[in-house]
Amino acid sequence: MKILDLIRKIEAEQRSIKTQLINLDGLKRLKDVALKYEGEDKVVSFQDIATRLKNAPQELQMLSGWVSLDLILKGFRKGQVVVVSALTKSGKTSWLMDLTTRLGGHSPMWLPFEESAEELIRKFLERGEEPPQGFSPEVMKGNTMEWIENRIVESIAKYDTKVVIIDQLDFIVSMGGDNHSLRVGQAMRDLKAMAKKWDICIFIICHLVKAKMDTQPTLEDLKGSSSIGQEADTVIMLWRESKRENGQVVITNNVNVSVQANRRTGKTGNVKMVYDNGHFTEKEWVAVDTKSDEEFENFTSKK
Image 1 (cartoon, helix red, strand yellow):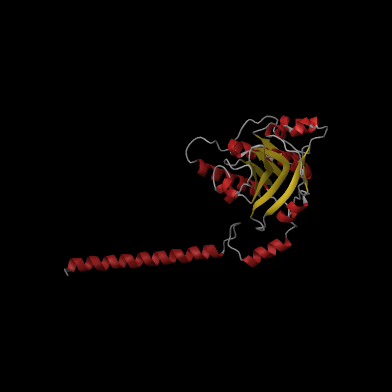
Image 2 (cartoon, rainbow, N blue to C red):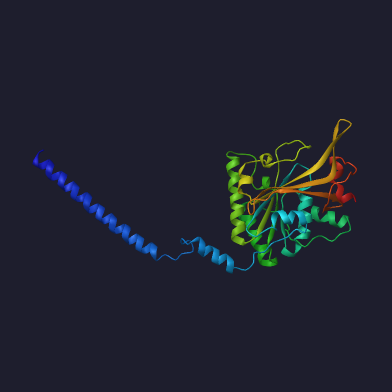
C-alpha cells in the first residue's frame, strides 16, 4: 500500500472514531434529558395508570332505560363513538329520537342533515307529546368537521351537552370522488378524536349496502368502508321483522336491536323491541298486523 493511501486510511479511521464518540456523547445527553422528562405524554407504568383509575371519580354511565341493552353495554360512555345502522325505513332516526328522550338529562344535541329538526319535532307535536329535552342548530349551514366541532362546542358551552347525534355519515363524507373508503375512515377517526377531546358520546347514523330484508344485517353490510366498524366503539344494528305474504315482503313493528360490536366489554347480543306510536318498548315479539314500508315511515305522524 502506498504511503499516501495509508495516511488517508488512518485519517478516515480517526474521523470515524471521532464521529462515533460525538454520537455516543449525544446519545448520553439525550438519555439524561429523557430521564427528567415530565410532559403529559411521558412513559408511565401500568401500575401508575391503575392507581390513577382507582382514585378517579366514577365514570359516568349514560343508561338508556332499556334494561337488556344496558346490561350488554353497561351504559353509553363519554369519549365513545356509537354507530347506529339499519336498512332504509327501519326506524334508525325514530330509535335515536326515543333514546334522546331517555338521555334528556345529558342535554343531547342533534345535527340532523337528512331530516330537519322541524320535521323531527313535528312528529311529537302531532302525537300530542312534548318534544324531548334536546338542541339543534337553527339552520344546518355546514357539514365540515370544523363546522360540526364548532356547533358541538357551542352546545357544550350553552347547555352542558354530553351526547351528540349526527344524522348521517353520507352528508359528512360525500359518495363522489376518489378514495371514498379512506375518507370515511378519516371521518370516523376525526369523530373519535372529537368525542375524546370534548368528553362527549357521539352517535352517528350509517347506511347499509343493499341487503335482504328478511335477514339480520351484520358489520359486513355497513356502507362505505370496513373502517366504520373498526373505528367505532359500539355498533348497533336495527332490523325489523319481515314476512312473506301472497308473494310479497311485508314488515311488522317488531324490531331487533342487535349490538354487534362493543369495544369496552366485548359483549354483544340482541334485544327484542316493539315500535308503537313513536316509541320502542323492550318486550318479546307477538303477532302484530303487518304494515307496508310507506305505512311504517309515516306511522308516527298518523297516530
